[in-house]
Amino acid sequence: MGVACGSLFPTALAVMALIFCAFTAAKADYIDFFDCLDGKWLNYEDSWKQDFDHVSIEECAQKCVEGTSEELREGQCLSFNYNKPRHRCTVIADNRATVDPFYHELINYSYYEYCEMKDILSFFIARPGYMQAGHDDAIVRPREATPRICALRCLRGADSLPAGFCLSFDMASTHPDSCLLSRASPATTGLPLVSNPRFNYYQRNIDACFNDPCVHGYCTSQENRINCICDTGWGGETCDIVCFLGTFGSGCSQTCHCAGGISVCNIQSGECSTGGCAAGWSGPNCQTACPAGQFGLGCTNTCHCASGHSVCDTETGVCSSGGCSAGWEGSNCQTQDFCAPNPCINGACENGESGYTCSCHAGWQGTNCDAACAAGTFGLECAQTCHCAGGTSVCDVQTGVCSTGGCAAGWSGPNCQTDCLPGQFGPGCTGTCHCASGISVCDVTTGNCSSGGCSAGWKGSSCQEACDPGSFGLGCSSTCHCADGVSVCDHQTGVCASGGCAAGWQGNNCQSVCPAGQFGPGCNGTCHCANGGSVCDTETGNCSSGGCVTGWEGSSCQTGTTFYLCQNG
Image 1 (cartoon, rainbow, N blue to C red):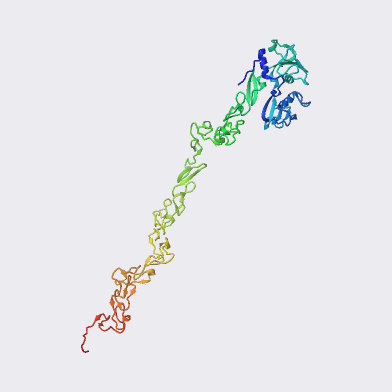
Image 2 (cartoon, rainbow, N blue to C red):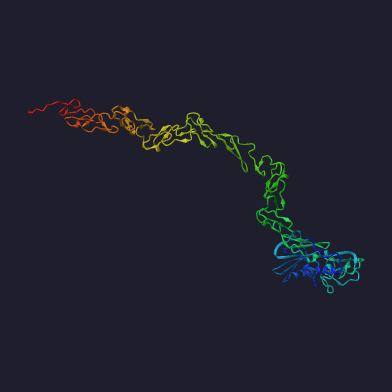
């Protein structure tokens, strides 16, 4: 990348064009002596400096070139800081190359511009031991005549030799006291230099870099071709193009590696404003590839490739060959196989992020499923409780089935895990509740009624005993009155299954005594007592006093007598 500005010894016409290329005005443009960086500031804490207020940046450049005082004479100023808002100029006797190494890095200050004087002697070709005879157009006598100061004077021009017209100068090789400036050179005169060990000759190397074409950078030249070294964040032949997204640095030569995408990449430094580095990269500006054996975001993951780190992709961790090393699995070998071999003695193993978990078979518990369920428990995770009538020792730890004795009171089912249905109780739920207040007050274990006592026809602590023959009802407190005996009497209701009521009783369950004047089975007999129905036995019809009424006879006065009516008494 370069722009030709002429050959070393061009024709006279070309030389004039080259002179115009370096200085285009009769008066030197002092700012052309400097490479300036906008927004930068040099820390000059340990350097000699001098401040000037209310000056332009061009005037500041002139002060640096010409010198300002006894303390900072011509040729001693190497750079300056310029405060743009305050128009304040600080000339400095150092530059980045000479300042204390601790301060050689420029500091970002948006309202400053830092200008560093170019290597003036690089614009001249030295010919030690030679001189150009007869072409001394101007003789200047600086306070100190050095090759650099004479070069500055040639570029600045003199009263009789305007800026841009000086092509060479001579000076004494020892104890020089003057600069012999000339508008001529062998290229313009066609005459060779004269050998003279008492002089040194310097000829302008007309260089396009003096009119620095690099917009955001600095210029270097070789064989009359320029090369722009761009500031970070800029590219293009003349450093006038902002780095495209995804590139950064000087000349936009570096590639961004941000996890958040190219939009978060600083075009100057490559630093990622958010999200950190993309997978496979690390470092302050994400330019360091993950070291062997590491991969992913921030290079924080470890490779597990059977064939070694060299086959591990630094972005994904995928092994290009050989698969995963022992104990690891997954597409990028990041899932540790904690289950190989299976640590779960009586169960299934499941991998986790940092370990394994065992799902124990029924009847087993513990971290590695190596402990049988405790007595009285069974099933998965030993979470179920045994309900065996024969105790915990007969309960199968896997199924809960009772090997002997069946289920404990209040439970049923193949493994005794089913509660007795309402109205049932006892071992295997084989007992039927008989509570006067309903099944809700029946204890499923004992059958005891918590309130209300036993229902009709039942007695005992758990109401499981039927009433004794001849009694029935609540508390078995009622007496049966059946003609065919107690065996046909319902122990709950007192109803006679056959034969009807015993003599002297009537009603649905034979609990009503015959009314006065009636007796016998079903109270179907009519009393014939002389003293009225009150003396008539309700069972037999016998009259307890007074005997039978007229016309009836017999033990129960149920036999009618024969009599005749007399006409006359």
